[in-house]
Amino acid sequence: MYQPIGLVRKYFGEKIGLYFAWLGLYTQMLIPASLVGVIVFLYGCVTVDDNIPSMEICDPKNNITMCPLCDRVCSYWKLSTACGTARASHLFDNPATVFFSIFMALWAAMFMEHWKRRQMRLNYEWDLTGFEDEEEALKDHPRAEYELRVMQKSLKKDKKNPQKMEKLTCRDRLPAYMTNIVMMLLMIGVTFAIVFGVILYRISTKAALYMSSSPTTRSHVQLTVKTTAAIINLVVILILDEVYGAVARWLTVLEAPKTEKNFEERLIFKTFILKFVNAFTPIIYIAFFRGRLVGRPGRYLYVFESYRMEECSDGSCLMELCIQLSITMLGKQLIQNNLFEIGIPKLKKLIRYIQSEQGAFQEEERQKKLRRYETDHFLEPFGGLTPEYMEMSQLQT
Image (cartoon, rainbow, N blue to C red; front, top):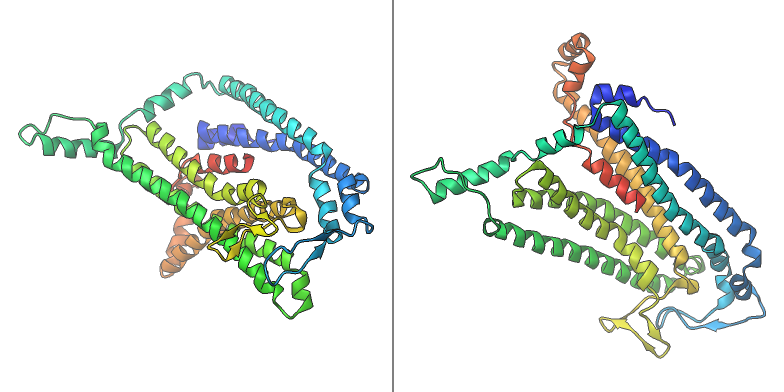
């Protein structure tokens, strides 16, 4: 995949050039992975009629009656009604998926090795032998916020000799460390509480829809509950992503790291932990916990002594996991990437244009006289590559 990496490097610098080189290689390496994934899916489509579990479920001779999925309002149901779900599950969970998982593990190793070779080649072509050392030297310089805190400490400790510089010790940072621990645990607790709230939403909504007098509503209860719960999880993930990003930065600033390198490392650690828990807690619950903590007929497990723990609908949680993953991934790409990265900058530009409407003509004339690099100088400030790499790491995970 061709990219004008040399031109990007000349205009934006080496760091941006390396990022686009990495992104181009990553996109290029996704082509074989996607082809293998399509082949695995097609294999599932071809062998769906030979799948023994789905054949047994769909066989009308096996007229097995299943227990209700909820109390009082839910009725008994036939296992044969799960035929469509069982056949659809085979498309995503078949013997070929084992091969695909092994292939993706090897693919990740191949990608890393390929990128190392690509990076070494660019280092040689761009003469970046001492680039990392220079970057480390710049990042090892004390931050202005750290020096301000040190100066304030020196003035409080030795008013007679304010020129004597101190340094921040663990004792000085102890309140910040305690605040970090408490806030991190609180944010993770908020995520768990929201996931638990969505569980209660699914349980109560399912019971309410089964009580409906409309046969159409009762026949589409499972699909309605799955889809709406996935959309709620998506909205919560998008909102908390922005909140957690701001909280992680605030907590890192509160610690007052000495160097820019320490600041970035601590910010990345906090942001990754919070966003990972936020994005993957609903998925981990559906994949590993839902349907395993329900009890047995006559002795079901209840929450608050009134909400019966939910089971996997139609005997499998795989389709609900696929729906949750599809809505989350597509929603994050369409809403977060397009709205936040394209829509909001356009809106800011429109607001600035409306605010300067009186001098619009003079601004237009001034823009005509400016050169390209002068026009770029008035763009939004560059926030660094950390958010871009965080976004890519979430997609890879």
